[in-house]
Length: 217
Image (cartoon, rainbow, N blue to C red):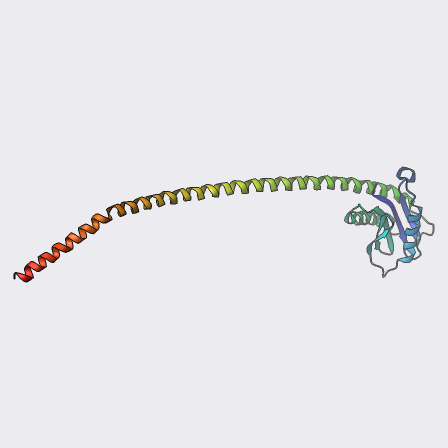
């Protein structure tokens, strides 16, 4: 489990109000040291402390939330989402205030609200399950993104194929026109001597006609 410890304490005197620990035998971890650190935080934090913060402690991270003179703390593994951890703290803070808000300042015995552990366990399991669902949802989203990328890529390939076909048609047309122009040019070149001869004969006739009328008029 990623949420290993949850504690709620009164900040005016550091009195622990309730706590919920993971079974040490099941986890194979000793949480006594971290529980003591949480108790020390209740005494060290003040009204001027940041209302929300994450604090690394060895292999784990403390996340705490302060509201109305009460500190809500959970100890999580590094892999656990910080956003989810604070959502979890806000959840138990809201329910704790509903159930015990009017009695917080009057109790003197440590862990006076230990029965709240039942709600903490349910909330913790709920957030763990929702975290698993979110992870699966993220995987599905990533798969959908990959699928969209693949479809987009193949569409790009098809579009490029269409463009290439259009360019190929234009190239064929230009090639045909070029061939026609070359053929016409060759025809003109083959007729060029006859055209030159015809022009010379026309010029000669004009000169002869001019000379006849000029000299014999």
